[in-house]
Length: 195
Image 1 (cartoon, rainbow, N blue to C red):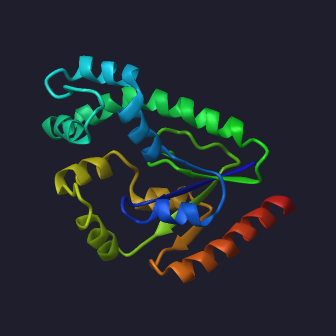
Image 2 (image 1 turned 180 degrees about the vertical axis):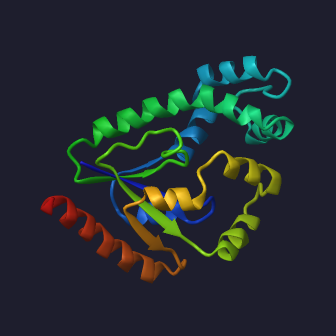
Image 3 (image 1 turned 135 degrees about the horizontal axis):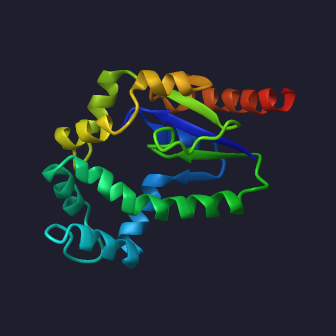
């Protein structure tokens, strides 16, 4: 099984591009959303850590954003509670898909949390900053301060690119991107089979 991790800026289209691979797909953001909606153990831990903010179950994202807004360090504290739950789901995902040729990983802090292994394939998604910013401003809960806090918790784009085996330019044209992914997917499989 080849683990392919798509990395890049927040709002660069990682989720969309990941799904174009048409392979088993793990999204840390999706798992966190499910966690907040259905995991009472996670809720109790967050509530006991931030009793002035986390009030009722299911956990509301705007309450967590207030926690982060109050103090940047709280992002790390939330991560220490949430990440073990996500890692457990990630291990289950890998176990279920062990016989698949490739799996796609969309995990924002994959490199920062040293989750990447030597054999993983990392694709850096290159996008125009102006396009990214335009897309981010359209998001329902767009908050420039929170965005900067999240970006500061990640490696710089240059660092992410340096870790990557392939660079994929995303121009947000679905037909072109589908074709690019098809070519890249077969290249990754060929490169792995020939090594």
